[in-house]
Image (cartoon, rainbow, N blue to C red; front, side, top):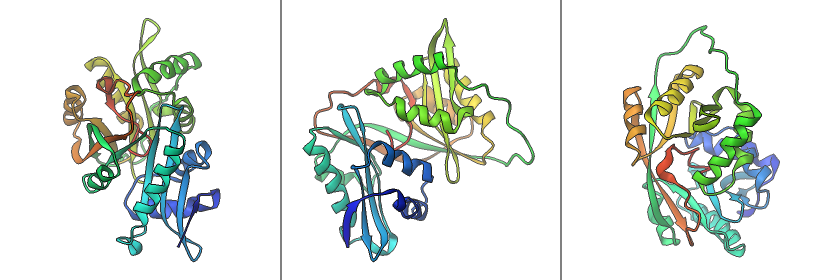
Length: 281
């Protein structure tokens, strides 16, 4: 076994593990980690094969995210995931950057032992619907440069740090999912999305009223042609939960946002309908 930094050639190996686990990530998601944090992504290698991964991504010096903690099914219960996670934490501790992650119920006790404490609760919602044979999505104008800048500015306040590079990447790869709900030239809401391995993923989804939230959700569902759609909603946001239920979504699994170190940049989670995703925050 050899624990080392991840490189571009390891992306297929990482994708194999996330696919094996039933996750929705694509090669583009792995590449986003590597491009932004080349020294903060790790693999466990055995005989030239990637059998475990962990990745970090820094949001300024406010906090960093830990995600993509995966171990090959044939190599579990050997401490590989813990060793990878500890390496990621060591890196962040050296830079004095607090760490955040979204934990499943199974992972939550391990993270608690490593010093992570709960921040708030998230729920994954899944919509499964009939396919759209031969149906074309409606035309999508995408965001103007002015809308993008206003959204990025608002998102810094709500998320707690600047993640413009990530939102810009999402808008570039899936411009049809980048939407704004403006009023008087200012965003009252916005949404982005990704085309995942087996489902389209809505997030972040932000709105300050039910009308804007529904407009964005309906717009995403109309633009998506996939049979499966995923949303990771803030559990305490009753407005978002009600809209998802009305649209036919079903609860899939709980997640707990956890933080290690001082939480000096919490953002405004109460203003969010849904996060971007557990791998990115």
